[in-house]
Length: 152
Image 1 (spheres, rainbow, N blue to C red):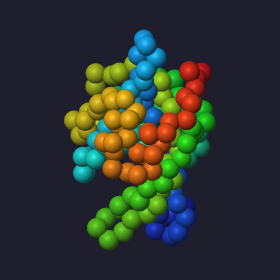
Image 2: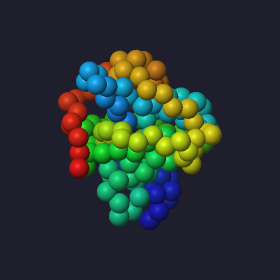
Image 3: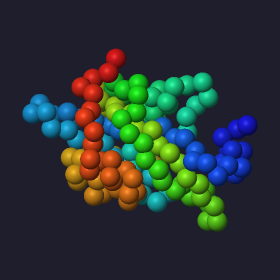
Image 4: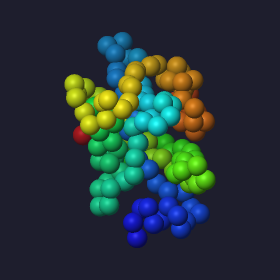
């Protein structure tokens, strides 16, 4: 069954995978990369539907490239999950459970597929948590668990 068929036939949360873009300064402080949504301009982290047969962390890494032009070392296990309501159209929405994988940025592309459709900015976690609308993502950014130093 395709992901779209399941969206309309299940009451259970649908899985998404997200990258948490992290830039680390020389003093050890971190900045979180946020992007805007294409339709409403809300601030979020890069996320999307998992690809069949592709591990969640790899799907998240691909979303970071496509949506924000960011590459790097991504953790193979999520540091957290959060739920949100995704609006499908004016009359329908679903609950999504988002797996969040830290992405330590090593490269920022000058060009990427969705560059013209989104904005990108880097903020300290506390400022990022105040900018996002989604309560689950805001809580995650306000209370970041320990982040792995680097990943293979």
